Image (cartoon, rainbow, N blue to C red; front, top):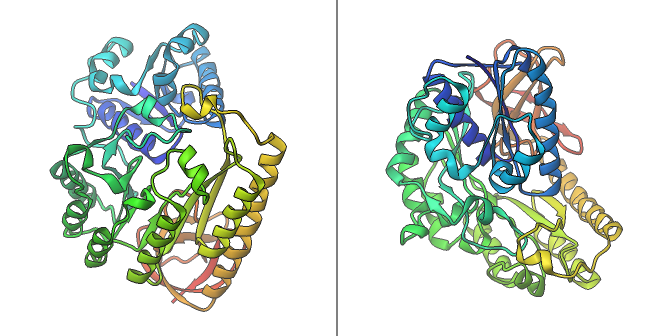
Length: 431
């Protein structure tokens, strides 16, 4: 059967999609690039915030149109299907089956029934379907989250944190490296607490073992909770030559009162100390963060404190979002005190402040020599794109753009002199 797959949402969802596609391919089905060619269409949805939900619904309706042609089955999986399954079943009759994440353990049985053909094997135990040309891959180290931030619906959807065994993750990483993966990106809702649900933090142990795998060049961590970045973890990262000094530490805010309302652990001074510790061990560390503006109760003075913290720390990469109420979370019942107009104005102020910092940091790189992992060749644009160690593969941190060259291929690590930049990307020339 020809199957088209649409994967929406975060990198964790992407891994889920690769696992489902791997299960289908192992059972003899073919994943096709166009929905026009498909006999069955899968949509892996996000149900985290309002824009993501809207995108998921829009995509489902778009894919439903193909059932008027060749496609006979439309299957919706993922977070939206988990969170709103009953409502979706009543409203979207075009969909043949909604499968929530809590049902993945019996995915083969469900797909056998829905597709009308036997599916053998266990979800998560089969080889993931990753493009043969891929040189970067995600390694999901745990499911769910136990932090219980008051604005976040992830624990409602995915449950409490459940870490995968170290041995399974090492074996998966070895398989990925054997297929040509050179950059391994560790992900979870909270990577820094890996293993704590089983009694002790084992992130350092995992990194140490991954560092010995032949073929891997870069190991990167995303989604680290700030107060869980301990001196011990920093020392372990320092001892692992393949672990890049890249710290994705979402702080959400820089006011103690608001952090407490968000149920974030630690204080602003704690975050300041963590950043000091990081930079003492890694003077050239890359710092990335995420912020929320307009959270219930946020005063103008508290927002100004956030702006001041941004100026003080000078993050390399920064993302920000306006607060979006999520039903069934504690923050949903909090009185909104910031108008939508004011939220947008504050968001723009954050972006403006960060834009100045980012431009200064990019300008300081001009003339430097950087190691770049080549991602893609674009014949039409006559350019090559790649990333430095301080740029993650999730299209958030920008890229390095180079002139087209017949001697450079995706997956190559090359030396590049940085020659310029725009608001988002760096430009360079190969050495």
